[in-house]
Image (cartoon, rainbow, N blue to C red; front, side, top):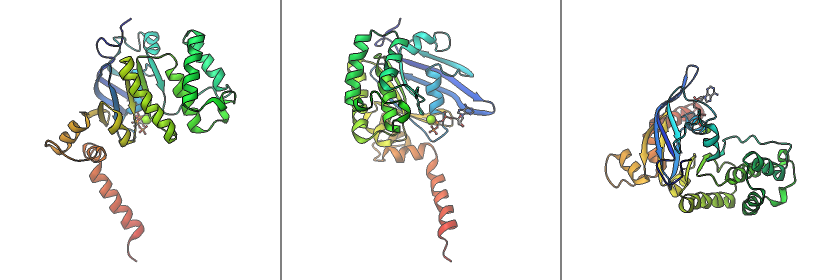
Length: 271
Ligand SMILES: Nc1ncnc2c1ncn2[C@@H]1O[C@H](COP(=O)(O)OP(=O)(O)OP(=O)(O)O)[C@@H](O)[C@H]1O
Ligand SMILES: [Mg+2]
């Protein structure tokens, strides 16, 4: 099996995804190498979750190629899935199981050594404050606690690639901080890679080594925050925030101004 540390972890080229008449991805190219934390930013419906599901082999592209550690997710699903820890945007867990049963189930499906898996889960569960919920049915847990269960399950087998679809959704400040530290640790220590989508500009700004802005199914700009600032302003050393860069590159600045103007007229017009 190819290993993290040699060659790209993700390589996507010319990826198109059609859902009927809707084009979710329109020729997307992406390369992520070991050690990178790649943040995908984009407006609702831009294609972030579709991209993540295609990398994970959950859906097939209409055309184009995707490789994870050199493997094609549709022809080598086992190799690809064992290399990935995935947290979906709306985690559907086995609601009647408790976290303890769920982690045991995941460990057996992934054929992990039970002792090592237990030790790792115990450390992660303690870090995320899950211990008091360990034997409660998942159905009874709060949204953020379910999210933590998904995150622990995704990290259990120490995969080279973490694919996280809006992983901070529902997490409280302490757990967000722990996850952000785990993400940094994963890439520094294990030379793994992380690709995650988020709407939280601040997070992308602080933890990503590279940010890709996806708009209408394509990456329209990519690079470090400074490189994106340059791309947005057309000059070196711009001082725009990532939010300003994002709105500019996704052409949403004018749309927002127009929407606000329309709303103001509709609701606050002087009588
Ligand atoms: N199963 C599906 N069937 C039909 N259309 C779909 C399906 N899944 C996604 N789409 C469409 O594909 C496009 C991209 O959706 P996707 O979920 O990838 O966006 P996203 O960037 O993750 O958005 P969000 O920020 O809201 O999570 C949207 O137009 C969406 O309506
Ligand atoms: Mg999404």
